[in-house]
Image 1: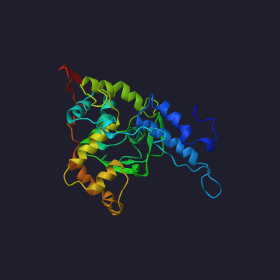
Image 2: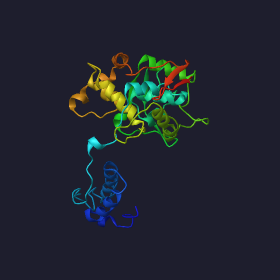
Image 3: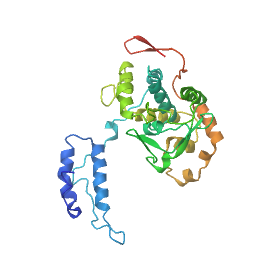
Image 4: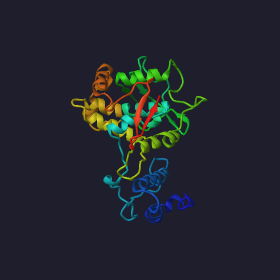
Length: 295
């Protein structure tokens, strides 16, 4: 904003943005720079006349502006192995490990998980979850990332049983909440539970060289696991993961509306990691061989 905020839109063009790109390149990664550049382009394009035509149409030249190229092999996109997931499913904090299990067994985004309401989003048997809102920064937002994000996700019966036990008879309110009933904050779970758990388990992020990874690693774990399930209909996989339909064949495929078939496939797919039972004392061993007991 300090670099462009005082310029009239008529002057926001390739030469004006180029110095800003150079400044961002000192501290930001290529993907972040491109995200910020997209915002600039949208602001310029938002000025239209009464006929809906842009006042200041632009031909943005990424080469002229020296916009860094996103190299896929260099992007930080970690996932978890079966062994790491089995360890996370035994983390000492009951709430955190339930979040870890649900994220990995469903492919839900963390905001979607933290926005789940027991009275609105679960079937009676907890086998199916309906996604229609998310939590962000401790607040509920009744909108999702994309249109495809509005969906249903079917769970392995074992996961459904674990969630039912975790809910402990509650039928309303958020599944995960603070003492005052507000949504948990993803940042707190990341800092106080996920990162410490990964460090204890000896996890190594191949891109950063440290033990840290974000919640999207659970989503990649689920996507990878589903990709290994022989015969899983592509339409169901797209539907569960909330991906947009890319072809007319996918658009006309209505298998996603067949809940019975989806549930059968959810049970067949399983979760891809060893799933402990709640209410048991489970031994967990860190990478140094130290055995810890968690309830």
